[in-house]
Image 1: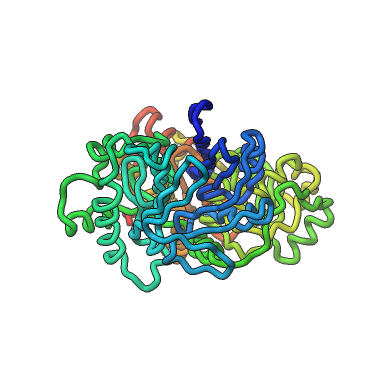
Image 2: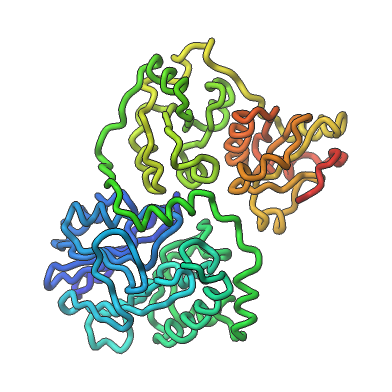
Length: 475
């Protein structure tokens, strides 16, 4: 938050579960404000603006996002704000496009638009000055062009027929010719932090300076354009499957979210009827309660942590969903799914899962690290190990000997690679993603267990080597 004595009001909002940063920028002398890269549930921006005596008159999108469904339409409905993208962007609703070098005055506060293609063709950055003639800007909102510690990926969707190499070359020029020409004391405010799939080496820091990034960001080091292209092309994590859906949805005129609307409440009978009619059961409890009793075919994605992202990695946005878990969290779950465009939530079970009746429930086995090691020693051929972590996690920390690497975002697309004649033992880092993966695999007919505590528990056990399972070579 900025100094209350100056004209600039600057508020950063950070959504941990999507590693997403958005911004309210206003001028307290005129009461005019913009919001940059909003999340879809927008009440926080509206109430914050009201608290500061500001009117949101414009929503600026730094680019067409793939990792979340942006709240531009929601804010426009709530406030009457205009929606702006860089002039290279094309969407299916009315916008007020922004040209390269254009200045937007909020009063004393000035916003300068820089076209910075590379992450996407229409990417822009927004330079914020507290006074129009300030030699050193307050900061620059860099979207997904520049992160703290990295630059944006050039290979995500929406590149209008341009190759990842074309985009990487544009990104090289945008960072060198536009952003690195700003004064070193200019603060950098990106759209994402650590954990986002939009970059590789994102910092946990939520802001920095151009000078600090010039000195420490590996992607801004002195190198040729060809070297840069190689650097940003190597070791990219798999993009969650929902990115393809969300990047298209962000271009469309779609229904807006009412984040305060209740989620339809389903009796056990209505819940079971919806399930029988083909709805996907999404169980939001933690892995151990889920394993103790759940509906056959249910997918377990715990509500804590990166709930929406994990759901988007294993389910399709077109699926009809019924929720179960804690009825008090149904609205939170619905809104978090809506943040990535999963809008087909039919309702939520109005009671605990146990109340559905034992005849409708099943259990799952979660195995302890020592037990898994013993089973591998006794019958290595009877188990196939599946590691659902990311390649960087395996590279940095190792894996269980013989495990096949199938990162969770790739799991559904790679089911044909997994054996059907052996039990699968799935693991991740801590046991959260493995419960998601195991539930998905069981729903598709695989005999599956998962490692409680994940690879951390395996690494921490009293070491005794286990044989390599048959056919379980790393992939």
